[in-house]
Length: 346
Image (tube, rainbow, N blue to C red):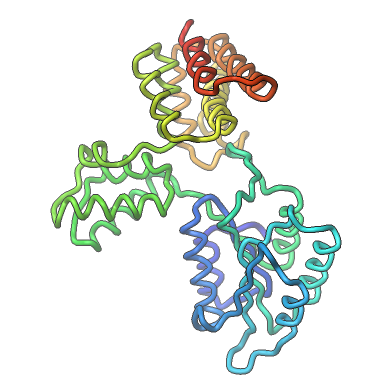
């Protein structure tokens, strides 16, 4: 069956549908954790009524034995496996795991979920997919059970959740402030909850304004990269170098940082080409499987007046920087700063 999101999983459970196999993963780790708790409560009655196994050191013999047990005081024998990474398993172990999945009894429910390793193997962008060996497991469970992918919501949808969450804490928040908070935190639920706790404590029963969000919320990688991209495109060198300092202070691995910056410029290049070909935002979202339409809307807006030549030149500079990073002993900070300075030259 198709991969579902949190709402799809909730709908299944509301309709009383229980599968024998589940796999939950995604970039929004708090959503993953919450959905797993919901599943366990619905299937086993409580977290203490489920058998929990560490997937990082999974004993397949134990899993096989546990999966064959009949439940005594519940409808299902619920087994939860956390962070089973097929990429680190031997071939014979993967085959054994597949056999266990194929032979799972009707009274047993296996719940696999991932929060402790990067299931995408470092891949970024809207079309990222789980690594091949993990995808093989996911594809099997998608065919014979339910797979739930939990990626961040759109800023607009997340803003609604923020308003409700803040109200429960006895405060209020402007809609524009809620949307800005969602964007600053890249719509990551865990990060947003942490910031809400801090903002509500500061507001002390009052209103959280956009100015408070702007002043108190720590910058995130994605939003700072977006600020850098916009500054480069508009030729604002001071703002660009300020963003560079913020990004370097985050101590992100340089290959990941370069890939993230490149992703933003690829968005701009697509937007420019789409506009020249008289295609719309919706066309780009559909053609390139973007999850968030606002990312394409921003690219269309920010690329107005830009030339394909300049964006292509920027991408070439980023590509050269990545090649240098992997082939030479260089000062990563200096390399990144020089690359941005070159990109600012039109």
